[in-house]
Image (tube, rainbow, N blue to C red; front, side, top):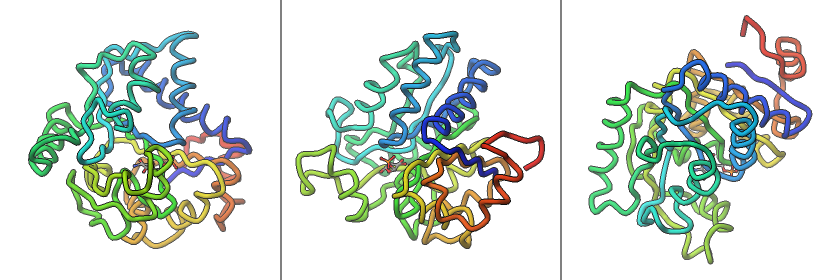
Length: 260
Ligand code: GLP
């Protein structure tokens, strides 16, 4: 696992945006796995800015989002469909027909999960999967104790996760209880995993992910099993790590190196 630590969140965001943009320049028909959440908002802003400055074009990109709330139609203002359109898809040249999220309002969510998994495979798998991390170590909506072999399915959200996301809804009661999410194994199959975490509230989850045991209690720790995973952090999100001086020695100031 590469651990890149930057002093400021904006620098971490800029690095992740550059990695995404570089891939799309090299492979204009790349398959991107996309994430939602507050952490991703400045990242998508930066990608929009990069696109406007000098490209790249996203017109040939196919995308699959990690998750969607069960029960919310795409048009619902709090759906992840709506989030993606407002922060990214409608702001640059994405071809909406190539963008995919699980259908939260499907009459048969379990079949929808299987369909989604098959669609990812039919697209040739994911080249780059963007990830955030929940304060409890979730990736996508794979809550603690999610099977590390899990595929796209319905997960019951923890009350902590519902409280963290309550700000987007009218009340805690209105915050969905279930989500359709790619599984941990689905995520691990992507060819490159790129996780962005900023802020002190993520510090303990980041430490468990990077330096804790591989355990379903912290689903993000499964990234330790991935051959090509990069974790990009700001100083605050890195503040509970123990081996910081080693990460900074290998990647001074967040610089990449030929060796991991
Ligand atoms: C959400 C999403 C995750 C996201 C995480 C952190 O619930 N399902 O994909 O990474 O929680 O969100 P934030 O960036 O708002 O802290």
